[in-house]
Length: 358
Image 1: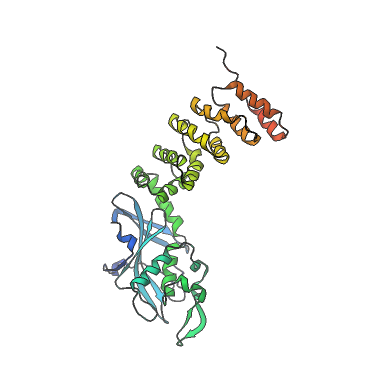
Image 2: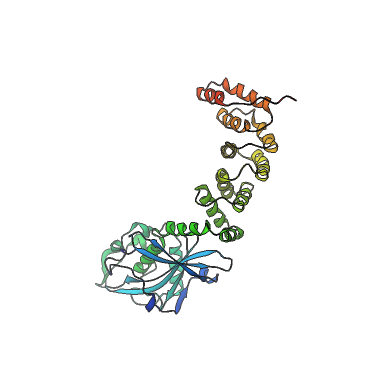
């Protein structure tokens, strides 16, 4: 985010050699974990201005990773610019996790230091991915009305989006936290996940909903490699009564090893209790998979439904199994007589092997 403060100093820079080690403020969530630096775990990402940004990896006691950036950056106050020394923390999902302030407390335009309530409001704002601050340029933060002949007042519509008398500091930190960094940090996390089974096990083992959703989302997008541990997570999801968890797990089914007997056994029970939309997702995931006897027993019960588009998908899956050949052939014969030409054509293309006579 090197061009953020063009009106003050035309770059954001790192100055680790001169930085103070004294911590003046640590956000509350950050205090709840003990993070340690990982040796030789320095990385870089490219920010929105094509500048290289240094990122460090940290870990908690369970081996779950966090991303950290320390920097000195200019913040304009009343006609001058002041450097602030801060550390920004993100969790492995790229979400803002916490803030540390070094050297001295943050200050406002009247040079008063931030109080506890100011820091609390700042952290609340930094937690908001979709703050109105996203829509404003740095030069547009103030109204044209002058205050004491020195600076304009904060725009009225931004009053709730910034700390009182600290619009520049709030804006600067929010953009450092949010603009472009999340996607790049997720890429760093994925590079670790795909080579570190222990990290994957730690994330799933934490049994945190947002962690599980992240893993399922990445699996759906095929950004992480399939593993037995992830398959267990999917099984847990499709049997869950939590709507979001169940939906994500259903969407991830395609990436699982559905030829595995244990997951088919689970699916046989889940299928019978599923909505028609969920059944369609299961059938879509089972395309090309041979259903075992137990799963086929559950699928065959839907042969009498009237939704012909559903029945075509059901027929395609059932033909890969080894039983119920007479019922499957009867279903095909029924669909071949459909009034919908596309249904007739699809049904005719499906090859059904005859039942083996004893």
